[in-house]
Length: 257
Image (cartoon, rainbow, N blue to C red; front, side, top):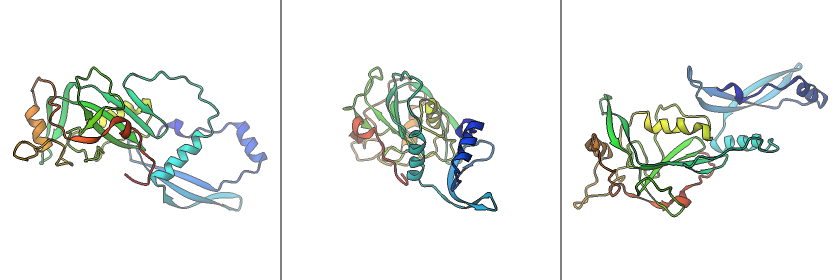
């Protein structure tokens, strides 16, 4: 866990706390994976005073909505934004709970594993992609175009046609290491979930358009046949997502996704 997650109060702050007789009533514990310090769970614990010493009691897991409330509470302590930020061209939307950006179609490696778990690297042309992070949940979609034009609110979104993606665009992240937040600094790590980890299976049998016989190709077979094909991505193949970008931008805090 980053050391900056919780800062140590100054001596003056401790004195002020003592003067106001502040009592500790609640503790949050952050549970991480061994060796990676990747946050996996936050639990809330009541704190009781026993002979002048605070004792942390049994805890209960925080829901996604609870975590959003904690973030909202911490942000409310900021009197003002002290650091100016110039947003990159590929950023589409940002607030404390949502981060949306896009990448133009490009040729790069795609990592996959076959049903037996054997790794393989494909050299393919990826579609235009839109990434969306909502409360540490990653979604991804695609859109038509040459990749030189930034999508607008009216842009019709399509399925990404990638493996491991559900019909609503949510990414099955498996054992991928996820960033703690959804800030500009976290973008590269979220992209690594797609670009640097191995796809293994299809989560959406309707990710691609059906052919004239009504047959829908499996996305894993679709990408295997594009290996080494140095041509623009066939943007007529992904199925429509059925939503415009402006209606897909913002996710709402909830207990689960």
